[in-house]
Image 1 (cartoon, rainbow, N blue to C red):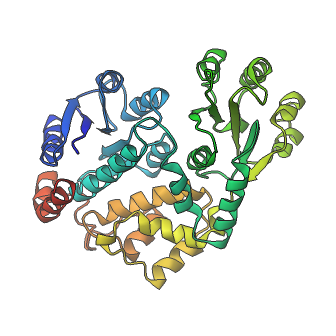
Image 2 (cartoon, rainbow, N blue to C red):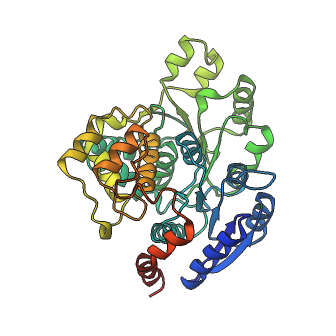
Amino acid sequence: MSKRILIIDDDLEFSRLLTGVFEQAGHEVLSVVDAEAGLAKVESEAVDLVVTDLRLPEQSGLDFIRSVRSVNEDLPLVMVSGFLDDDAIRDLIRHGVNGIFTKPLNIFSLLKRANQLLEKSEGKGGDGGAGATGPNVRSLFGHSQRGKAFLKQLEEAAAFRRNLLLIGPPGSPMEEISRGLNALSSATERYTSLKPGQVTAEALAERLPGEKEQTLLVFMEADSLPPEEAEVIMEFFGKHGGTESGLRTIFCLQEPVENLYDRGAVDEEFYLFLGTNELVVPPLKELPEDLLNFVKTEFSAEEELRMDAKTRQLLLDHDWPENFLELRSFVLRAASLAQSLTPGFAHFEAALRRTDLPAAFPGGESAGADLRSFLNSEKAAYEKAISLLHP
């Protein structure tokens, strides 16, 4: 089915290239050159996917992504840039970017990821509902013993009445877990989330459920809420809370609320308001099978990922202090190092060490190649991608 793709890039030649790629795949394409025009298109047009550059006139691609996420939490966003370091990649992941690619670009990988995102978006029905999120949580946690135990706890916690404290180490997939809880609820709820700096009386009032409606309100990074925003939350729920209000709340924390209270990060009033209904997210180090499965599933079966014993041990020996956030950043870097190749041990090792491959190594020599010559070398993969997306 034809979808509408928005491309934001001030490199007109590259924008025309991507336009041709998506049009040949059967999609309608809109193109603009800056973030402001891109946001106007998102707000005024029915857009199914956005592909944006990082370096744009006036505002950056990250500024655009922040603006989009304030008005549309579910729109699939893909970043394509020649200027991405590890910190930039992690920042993009934190802000909900669904795909990140470096230039020179592997067209086959871009089209494959675009197809995946469009299929997921279509499965949600475009309404931000939770239909596709339950299976997503299961794909993250359903392969290890500890992960299966967490899923069981998740299902048991889904019927909470008022507040739930979701506690996980830095880099935990709080968004996916919160949406999973939304999907597991017996009632249909509108899902919405806020971060520190976004909490105002007006913002909360906009999220009040209407008659015969229910809302799941999620506060991300809740241990960083400034005191004045915590006060706004308590005042709001003092007026509109209660078990019959149709409003449930998840507070995402990095440590138990008792710890926050003991070191003075939250006052007694907010501590009592939060309560003690907790769900603890296990760190990635306790989920070895889930870790390996996540890496495998980021690459399609057609690519035959070479997950040999040496590669598995490399991944399992790493501590992953930033958990799934670090793992996602690692996978993106490995794919970038491999370029048109299927990632192997050397790509994974270099990604973990945050180093580049030597030019003589397969995949290393293409890192600085001219885009046009690289795309010519990708002709067979490009034609294969087109056939998959537009039979």
